[in-house]
Amino acid sequence: MRNKIIFGAVLLAAVFAVAIIFYRRDKKVGDMETSKIKVVTTLFPLYDIARNIGGEKAEVALLLPPGMEAHSFEPRPSDIIRINEADVFVYTGKFMEPWAEDIINGAVNKNLVTVDVSRGVKMIAGVFHDSDELVGSLDSHIWLDFDNARKMAENIKEVFIAKDTENTLFYERAAADYEGRLSEFDLKYFEAFSNCENKEIIYGGHYAFGYMANRYGLKYSAAQGISPDSEPTASDLISLIDQIKKNNVKYIFYEELSSPKIAEMIAGETNTKMLLLNAAHNLTKDQFEKNVSFFDILENNLENLKVGLGCW
Image (cartoon, rainbow, N blue to C red; front, top):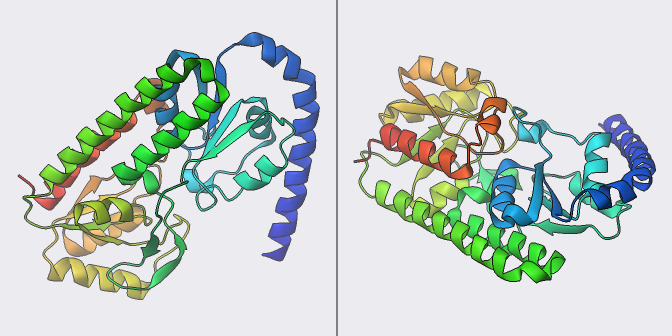
């Protein structure tokens, strides 16, 4: 572990050095190319919020390559350069992007404005399935509580206005429209879960839906911890399988962009069916090319949840 930390520090130092060289070389060219705000975001929900609020006034980029699992992402030298060339850098916070603060602190672009969208959000701790044992970290999937997503939109709007005060009214209207759609989905979710055969979500992936479960009064159990790299123990799986059989759960949900092998194993042991429940960290390449939105994902999730929980 110590060697890994040292290697990471050395690599990061090298990345900063490369970034400085390329930033100084390309800065003037980049300044002449566009008058739009240049925005770099880390995850898809942030990208979707920023591009909707920024509209024609902003050039918004997603740092996470389409198809990549978000938790395994580590910035490359070219990513550091992109951040340094931006006007605004949007990230979720230290629990989702532990590397972000080092990049921000080492940025050579002193005009770069950063926004941690978790500012003002009350974060919750992740827990193992059907227990009170903490995973050991706060849950970073804040956008799956739509009230939090509205706060995220507000934080992004404020930094856009700070960077481009001339278009304040534009950003305020766009943010109001986006937050209004979030409110509509919030109501749809509340209504959908008011009449269900059961309210227990069994997730054969990493812990991601705690915020959503809390908001809508659902019971949520995940096979893994907050990181997709965490592996459940045999006793964890046996306990979860017993829970499924005891509570007559009919569907197991699996996650996007990760192997469904754990969900498949649980489904095979319990004779249950499988449904996708997408935490919206990122899109596949095909989805990105088709311009799939955050709201498209939320709509698909709701339909699968209604089937899986027997809602009518």
